[in-house]
Image (cartoon, rainbow, N blue to C red; front, top):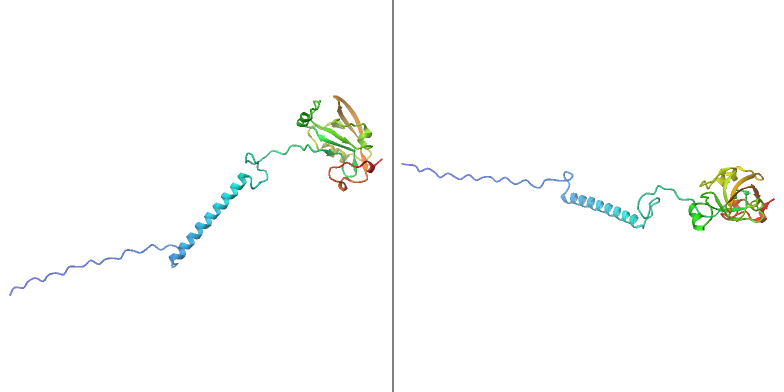
Length: 212
């Protein structure tokens, strides 16, 4: 008896599961924890950038002043300040000459319309009555151009140096210009019974405190 061939069963392909998401962050850490850390880092970086931008903007607009920063050009200034045009006094401690002056600069000569070719030295501003300067014959608007033969120029601290080195009772030889003429005036350093540190700032020794 003839046997019929048995139908072969179709082989079913076994489907392999697709690989899952690639793990990130610390092994074993939940995905939600890693996402929170990333969000925190991004927020921190954004905050730093924002604060930096606000600071730069404040400096640029002048809300914050940075020492040495020029407000017009926004560049660091390397130039030194010009000599002060405020009145100066001759006193140092107990020493006095009974005189105050302005530092003479080309700008001062021009602004006051002074008839002089001098561009440095001291322009006498005031003289204390019965003080050493008055005794020496100095006058307001005299220009002191040299002390003991040394030209002052723009060395405006020269007077203070000479006063400190000159003992009370000794004389300094002043070269002055008055009405275009040059002459020499001896000035004797006097004593003040009220030292400069005990008086209001930038004030001359009062006449009644000058010791003769």
